[in-house]
Image 1: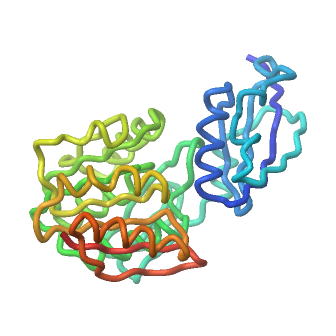
Image 2: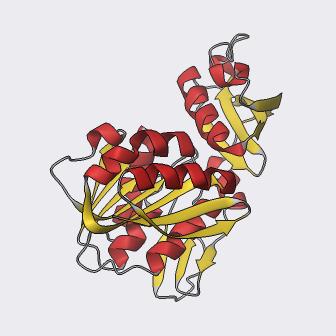
Length: 278
């Protein structure tokens, strides 16, 4: 194994869904580790795996919908744990929920979530995740059936189970996310959550959920909304995030057409987390 890596530092606009798509395509091209930052993402590939045309099939770089610039450099072998530990600060939501890594000191709040995020995705500190945690904290999860779409680290499913949900499905299209979710669920002694690899097509059609959480991006939400509604109980809640303030009208219109009623929304740095009721 080579001790030398090639580092690409990408600036991506708009940040989402651009960064998410870019990471997925870079992973297909052979990049093995990613560190998100406020303007985009750093991507790493071993020098022995790198070749001159490595980015030729990263199609988002040719898309007119995104403005993506990058710089590259050769670096010595990276200590991945050190990298993400350096960038992973604990968060506390409403003095009731803390999300931290094993090496952080306990916060002694009601819901203490310990995660070790994989380098292929963020650490659960994005504005959308923060607001979704707020929504879940205000929800009655006791005895409820919950679906977490685009689960990432499974931090949202973990909080829902801690709050008393008794049957949960956590779904993600990224195999690394599913594996990391399993680890985090075990780490937090969650025994009622199942992990499933895939997209909306793997949602168990025979189930009816009391609460569906979908923190993805505008286009996927619009595309899959009818599937979410088909498995949401009457009177159930749908929490949506991963989109900007200017996207709220089109999201609301789509939900209304499917029989959902707008409940409320939160806003943080132009990101939205909205609640709809069936």
